[in-house]
Length: 78
Image 1 (cartoon, rainbow, N blue to C red):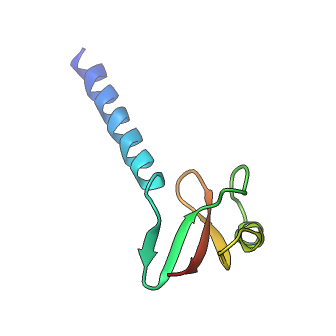
Image 2: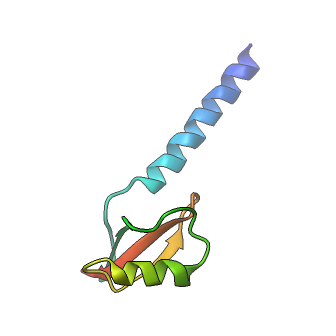
């Protein structure tokens, strides 16, 4: 019983960590801001595809894939 409780607790903790890394607001790294693309659909496998979609979105000059769930994030100068 204790073993399954420990496994369940570990699983819940892992899921919380993964969700926390994906749900952050716009982050500032140096002088570049990034936010999750509103136009890109599906899993982001290639930076070039993400970059071209982000250039169409207003106010963004590029983009890249990152994160455990491989999302497209658009970038712009802060």
